[in-house]
Length: 58
Image (cartoon, rainbow, N blue to C red; front, side):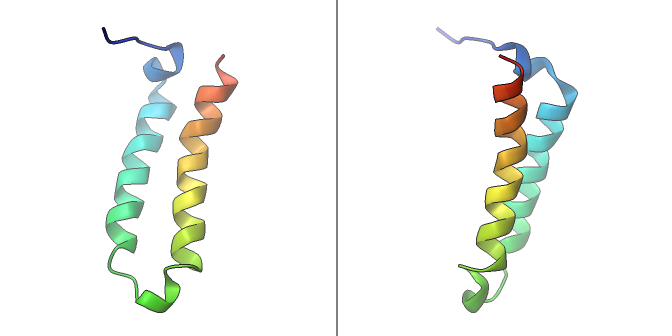
């Protein structure tokens, strides 16, 4: 059974998921020496946006 949460109806949450996908696709081509620097930080921060929206809506 699929559950639906109120944050899943937010346009901001939907857009943040699209942004996360774009960031992951863009950063995959970054040089290896950046994998634990800027790439890691960008990926963690973009996931944080959708996580914070979900957490804040409960």
